Length: 154
Image (cartoon, rainbow, N blue to C red; front, side):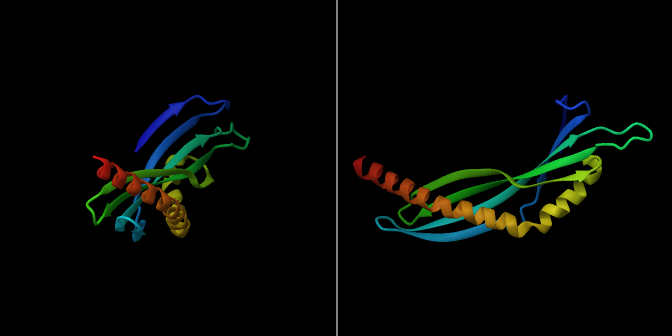
């Protein structure tokens, strides 16, 4: 886990952390029919990163504190596509702020709870990944058509 500190616009302390969360069950395989090339096998693998940002400050005696941890999750999907004609293409897609929230207190003490919250919302992560897969379908077809044209010219 990488932690860094910076002074923010707040009068309190601002800390950030990146936490990689295992992407269990964030995999998808599909076959896309291309009119010129034939079937294209596409494998997708998703991974998540939680970014935590400590904001606020500990209150003085008798005063409430404003200390809380803001967090967000980014989703990265790696794709490998292989056509029967031997063509291969890879792509990486990232969507930030797929999930976000906040928790009271220090990020360091709330990390496990945040990870459990993210894990509990795995269905939402899978839905976002499937939306990215659907958008990628057109990209695969264009990439394959372009590669076929280059092969026929060269």
